[in-house]
Length: 330
Image 1 (tube, rainbow, N blue to C red):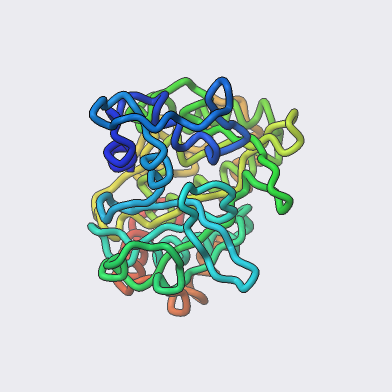
Image 2: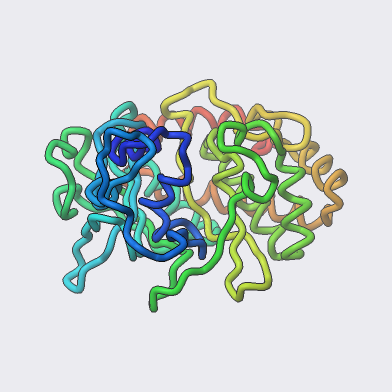
């Protein structure tokens, strides 16, 4: 998406200043970026790759069919339909299109997020919609799949105000390309415990356990975020980006080290005890939350897996995966 936006705006992908000129009115959280004089970008020739034209800005948030899965901010109309704004400003929903490379990702994500809500995880409003019902999509997008996943933005209020958020790559000062490397669950847990106490710890363990159970190998630093609802106190943001990746990458493992290991089979009660000790978390809370999450998940999985819209290959992959996890037999 970054390369596409850079190409569309006529700038080098590493020239963040000019990309922010096109995107700065609808960034995540409560940050906006404008020119110093708050004037429109000059309408100059695009022969200079360091210049951004008005036309480029107007179309910068339109998109191509490239990428694993495109996602963008959308506006819900009074009649209930979704529209992609020309400049992407003011959207209250994130729409995630079908993937070019992997089958039925929107159905997968909707199913995993729905399950997460059933086991008590804080999940925003979600839905799965027909791609053909979304206005302003380029022609041909439906060839990738008929469904799109939508999730309500938790960094916007109903009145349109921005709520600040920051992901853990920002918290730790890590560039996106190192989002799998520079921290562990132990590091995340220390921050969450310090900032939001037992409630935050329980929610963190609940999500960590759930994503091991579904085989989600993509919970990297940018898929964990903090939110400042009152602009002062911080807590874990609502959940997002829960996908069973083992359906596409059978040998996948955790994006981040738990306490000592990264294989899903390393996520044992012994590993959780080690995590609790090293991160100074209440042992009883950690162990009890993990046990409760496992029990709730297995109940909901048994009753709901044939009713959720995930592809049968996803169900099969998770069923096979669950049989390998020591945390289910402890």
